[in-house]
Image (cartoon, rainbow, N blue to C red; front, top):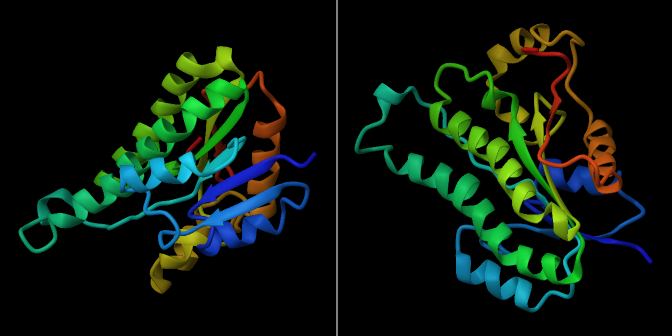
Length: 217
């Protein structure tokens, strides 16, 4: 029987491409119009009506670039928006799905982090901090739930062929690509390979896997 995968943020550029590389799973892709992950009640109600969540992938994210000293009354709300999506949203998903996974004695949780978690760059203070939270969260979820057959890992993504990479300003595209040892974007297939590894390998949990083409090792 095919295992089911719930992909939050699955209707975006990265998620829609990832689905194509996971043909042996029953996949439900969810966008913000389907479930607002920043709304605990909405997420909790979703899982009450969903039958036995087995694999959760959270691709939801939001980034706003600004150095800390440039936050002011006109853009201070962007801090809350980033933390709401990345931190609160992830916590809403986890706290809502874990009771069901613990009851059934099985679960695979895959969160998305960033190379900025360990190597922040100018203007990414909030986003980098949120992703560092995600990397550490996987360890706590593991400590609390691995004995119930539930693993939790994160994908520490570099510049991939999809998603937020396309928001890199054009003048910096060449410079960014030249900074990658492989001189190319990561492929969606490479993300899918990591996803399948985490699903199939229970002995790996609490781990943040770098998928970044050798950057900042």
